[in-house]
Amino acid sequence: MSREQLLQMARNNIAHGDAGTIPQAKEILKVPACNYYDEDRWKLEMKNIFNRMPLMLAMSAEIRKPGDYKAMEASGIPIIIVRDKNGQVRAFVNMCSHRGAQLMEEGSGNTHRFTCPYHAWSYNTEGDLIGVLAPKDFGEFDKTENGLEELPCLEKAGLVWVTPNPHSTLDINLFLSGYDQLLENFGFEDWYLFGTQRVDGPNWKIAYDGYMDLYHLPILHKNTFGPDFPNQAIYYSWGPHQRVSGPMKGMAKMLGPDESQWPTELLVAGVWTIFPHVSIAGFDGGGRAVMISQLFPGETPGTSYTVQNYLMEKEPSSEKLIRDAQNQFEFLRYVVQEEDYATGLKQQKALESGAKEYVMFGKNEEGGHNFHRWVDHIIDTKDEDLSKLFMTG
Ligand code: FES
Ligand SMILES: [Fe+2]
Image (cartoon, rainbow, N blue to C red; front, side):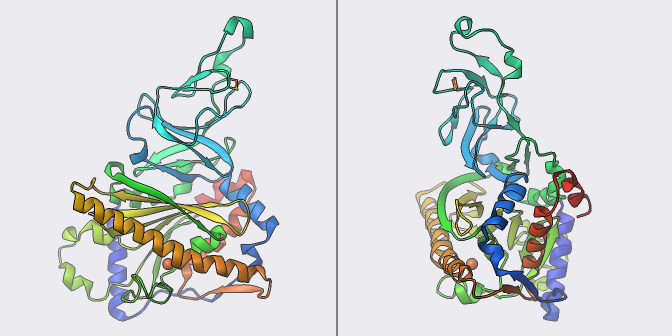
């Protein structure tokens, strides 16, 4: 846990708030408009980012007990994430060693073995092949060599990262760049998953740009939560992962001189993004909660979908709290679907006209600068040099 880093950021946000300033990038950034729709560029992003980088695919709250599993698709790869009998989270390609059938339907449940629907070969939660139908008829072979294909997987801070490409050598800890220690301040490992829902959106980078963008809040969201929101942002980064929060004018007085008493809840305010596809933002609806949005590219450059997860500090304990949580969750679907992504889908269409050569990120939108720089770096980096990129930050 890194409370001291949270305090440093709070002090900095207070100082900026009191001085009426924000940190600014040196220049306005121009990003080629075609980066949002070019087919070849998109294929490169899918291959070099979404296939070989760790993705935050599950929350510990989804697979709390040994045998709890979740089957899903990410980057076109069918994946099973499971807590094995010793409590360790593992990920496998959802694919039978016999002839490649998918073992589990998408969804979640609890099991002590995965049995193939085709010829009933079965595997334990450690991925070992433990049963072959009519083995004498089939013929002898080395079962130990034919377990499930395991994927790099790491559980940290109540979140689970999986790399869809089994051959990726990028160490997930290295990729996290210490960011997981900041996320630990939430204590997600003990939180409760209230619900998930799906929203369709534009090119994944348009959606991700929006998550780090506070500049638009009082404008695009003027009819919902926005009118009272300041539009200034202060960005912090750990490798490609970024937190954005606002200046905190006059907050030192309100919080008092004893920093050890400053509430963690307030210190973690803002939006926490996990590169390349997750955003976490705090809310209060039915109790303390966060919305964890997992963004996935769609079938084409111009599409994506987002899985919104409403994760609550405590399971709501009364009808009223459940209703409040439901209402907050529905409100967030509305805002993202009808305001952010509705705008993004039209933006996508306009960009695809090819009429503009570039789009801009202001000196006040440094999060966008960092994000697009990382995307460019990573897609240009060879497999063997990938780890180096994270060692240097
Ligand atoms: S493909 Fe799975 S048992 Fe045959
Ligand atoms: Fe927004």
